[in-house]
Image 1 (cartoon, rainbow, N blue to C red):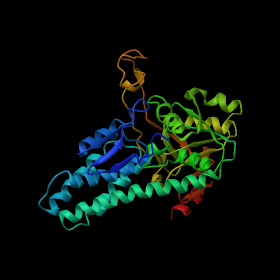
Image 2: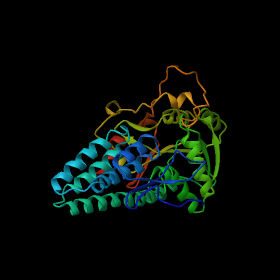
Image 3: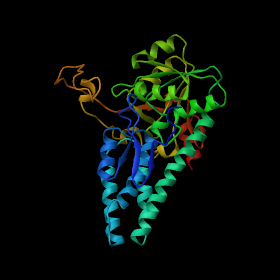
Length: 346
């Protein structure tokens, strides 16, 4: 292992792995203000629904510590504004809002400046610790679905980098390998920001897990050739009729269904937004530069003409009818989801 550290943690301020620098460089950066954290979230230095949950929680703690206030009421107004500010960074992943609201509610119970700061930081640390515990349970439960010698196709990045530590879909693979199973992985590159090639392939190589990188358009042929035993992906939000995940997930689910391959979604219970349907969810749309350049940091590497019209949604919705099972820390949930999910979540 080259790295074995939490993706995000508190050390006087928020520290996090800058994922935009990988795989070229591993660097931990500091966010000392709420504006710096918001910028890190927007530019995807920190991403992945569970990691964003922790970031939201730590963000409220940071806002409570970044300025000196003489009164509890003044501090409470400040962290309320910080919560609203952070909530506009990314609209699709429900976990971000959960982390923000949970720590905000706890901090507002404080009766003094000191107590507000302590409550906020303690609750943020609880969220981070709980994420690791959940991921280990998800990994252990999900590993039961994989047989020794299986080859898994995964999409986007769902490893330790997408969480506080361990991972969701990649956590299932890690847990299976830890149990002694031989598991191989096909990782789709995940255009346009290549989280699969830059992050997933890098992580799996760190773990010593056999990984083959393919372009997104190759998912069909590897299934057609019988090279894939199952597909495991993560989720940014799960509603009553769909799973929202990185753009391209829906396509992979259709291919898996066509070829009779199990399609699993690994996610914590905080990713569920069961009162809503796919029509209620705002899908984030990102800038055209992500499509025009081979990498947004490389302005000399143009792969499309300047000025071309672009459509760049960051996520898509996969109908639950395409999902074989949902792997959560509360157990493996199988269809019919309209009955099984409420029973588990309650």
